[in-house]
Length: 300
Image (tube, rainbow, N blue to C red; front, side, top):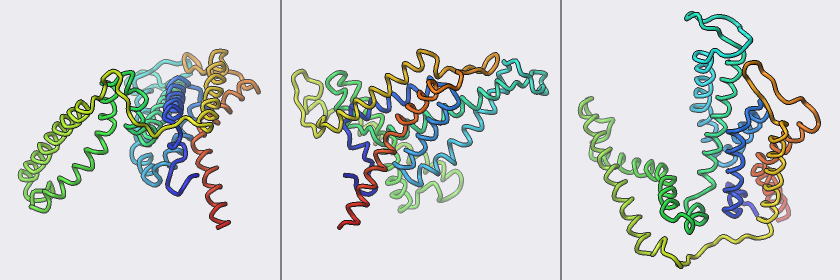
């Protein structure tokens, strides 16, 4: 049962989480159909808001939107392919409809992939990643796990160091420009030293516990239950159906030399609907658990 401010999908088995993000990330990078791109971006944004709330909205408006606009403008400025010429740039190169459309599509794809990655880091914690790959690739899984944890831990430690420096009057907001620069270099030096020491301590700790040795067993809180089996069957069905749709050209779309895509038919529409259902799976699960929670609260 979902409680407030908890993501239901995160409570599923790590295999389910990893398989889901693997599918949506691969499909988001491979499918250039406008409908598929909008589905991916819309569902990624909805799930990111579900996970992070207002922080997700600020991130999308402050970072993703300018990045999308920049990507959409840069492509037609440097790519002049396409048969439909709209006008000519001051440099004499043509501005084509196809290059503009491809620029928008590339911007949407990039934004959706970044948003999905943001959701991935919130759901696939380091312990889940080590659980999945610790026995197969122990050294690499440990390094990747440490890298995924590095940014949030670095930000938290940077805040602690900055506050400590501010209390003794050595923050980046105190003194002249030269003094602020010296304070910033001092804080950076402290953070680099902390990061190196933290990496060494983690490596020594894992080595002393026998991490990666053959025959080593470890405790795990993850159990593959009936709920996970149903989710696995659903993801396999969606993935297989969408791959079949891609193989037969139901998700085909091109931008050069002219814009052309798969015909709109019930068969091709079904692929997009299944893709929509796949991308919305965590949001749907959260909504179902929210309704159960509200129903139980009303009965209490």
